[in-house]
Picture (spheres, rainbow, N blue to C red):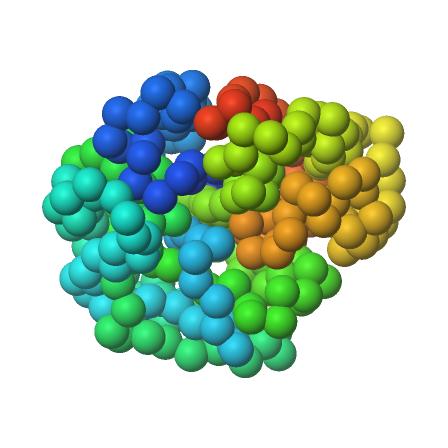
Length: 272
């Protein structure tokens, strides 16, 4: 009897841009907005969405478990419209419990959070991708130790979710030097290009052996201009979780966006 292979859900590392600017019509985000609206055609119709956001760190892995999470406006200094954005996607307590079980079964301490709402790393990109807000969503935190090896392990522990038609989104930025974004005097182009090329090579080149690929991600600080592009690595680590989730079945990603956000080159990767 021929074995029928079950399709695996996609894993997507995407940029969420600067605060609420992508949904406020900011011209520096036009390429990103177009990309997020178009990429959904390649993602199928997920039954649920798991988001690992750069804007949530905890001592141990924490999962939103409220059936109706609210919105966290975790930014400041924007026009009033930024604080009126809504994204009323339902939560998914059942999925939250499943993630908790997978993590703890793999030796990773975890907890459920019934109070926390969705931060902008989740609701900004999803508002552009799935504006109807009908798909149940769950968020998983980063670990506040920012250890890359542990974030890959976090992903590996929940890799079984891919067989459940659950879209997994790592929401961060491949370049996140805020001073460079907002400075007219810092020339970041060389550093930006060099790190971006390293990231694409590491994640997409089939010539790289799996163990080498993983070690490069663990030792990401050795990449060209790594600490310039990421003075703090919370916006890169959702990629490590994504890689961990995909590594067993789809270790090689493909580049699905390599455009400009506020003048800086930013990359999105898809494991499918």
